[in-house]
Length: 490
Image (cartoon, rainbow, N blue to C red; front, side):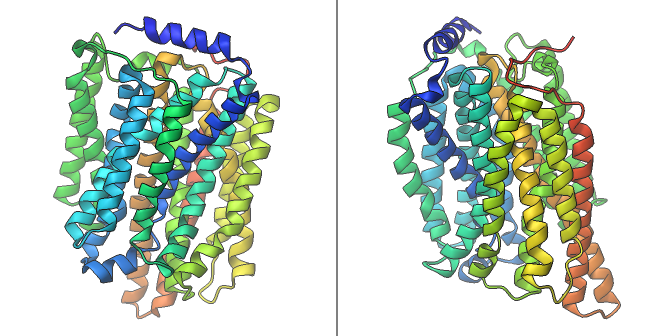
């Protein structure tokens, strides 16, 4: 692959705008990129509260309904690596625009869906759009802002917005579902995309590249995307079909074969989709694994607490969404503080402490009672988690992008986001199995339904806290970027 264009552009960018963030255009660019991140992270959680209304309106079966959130997750995680590499090869603005258009159009189709099949198809397409959009946006950020304190500040703001959006999505889902209706959970995306696209053309330089056909690792693209799709699909389907079923084992075995074949191909390909040399960047692999394990615990929290509030405490969709507002505020404050701490103590302490704080918050929430009260049983744990969530988002995002050369920025962004999506699927699969097993056991002994459900949620949240404690231990192996530039491991 001819990297001369990339290298020249990156050098010119650095020389021209070492303090780009201090300019009005720099701040507007960061605002735009954060808006893209907000749109993406909100989309992953906004539909959850609307699921009961979607089921009754479109006559979904229980098994079909899981495909509304899971369909998005499967294609998002499956195509993420390909999307990131395409951004490096074809131009980041081009891929960002393509992903944004796909998100807008598929959301419009989903909002007008008259049956379950159309809505599921739209969610699958949304996942593809997000897999193109988010790595492109994050790689634009890391190549636009100068390595050091400027980039750390930009990444801190980006990560804070991402953490905030995950919580805000639940709130917006409740407000829209109880207000204009569940279809507006999807209609907000086309409106947002129409606002984002002109800003992209106005603020993001055209870095279009004419990659040679040989630059596209077609075999690697098929094997890597196929392996990721099958792996995430196996995770999503395992709780329903059983972890020991022939179908589940076959799916995992197929994913394993494809991923091994992909890695063998990448070692032999002259222009690999995933240059394995990227893992020589100190701490990058550990940062991605930390993100995977941490997000497995953190994002599953929203799923189980939402079920607890609606099915046990009897909250309405709007009440459930409003319950997360203090967490949104806490995430924003924690992200701001953490981004300032990065240049002083580095990413490693921020991530480790953040994961431990979040683990403590989830442990508190794992003690929720059947007759729980918001102020006594939910609010304290949510606020503790919010502080840890903001720190983990900022620390992991910065560590996973530190020291990455410009020509691999899209790939690094894709690896981080793929790890987060696989972590989400992994967490939901494991924790749902744990919660369901406990609930069914208690129901078989004639325990009241609220008690059985609550006990299952308690087990899932406790397991989530253990995952976050494990993420803190793994984070000890990450690089400790302070803003003085990354480097490759010996």
